[in-house]
Image 1 (cartoon, rainbow, N blue to C red):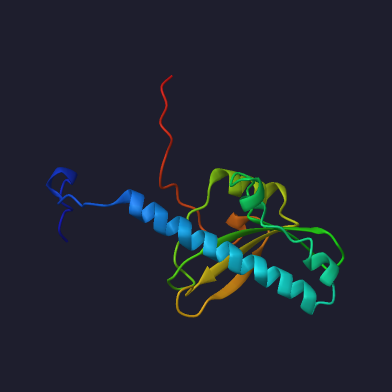
Image 2 (cartoon, one colour):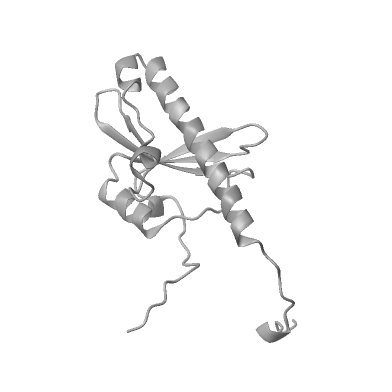
Length: 149
């Protein structure tokens, strides 16, 4: 078995982080709109159209730091908070979760849903996970905030 090369010998990789961020933001917004329409359709199909009219795209209306993207409802009127994670790839593609999203999901596990949208460009599909995110996913720290003193 070969030893891995030291980091200083690895070739540099050029990344256009601004283009990547814009692409991810655009894909994420499209996924949220898709999920919003799905939620409204779901409630109408369940016979509670009056609740479908009250579903909101919370992250677009109030900002992105809420810990969820869509505020919806269960058929009995209880809150349903949905975080949407979208990919153009397969259903098992890893995704990023903020500390705020994790905390919100923990604190509201009984009414939190994660909608995983996948194959979004070809044939959008989704599945739903209920409860805290770590209940369903392995979490790996991939970045850290560094501060002074």
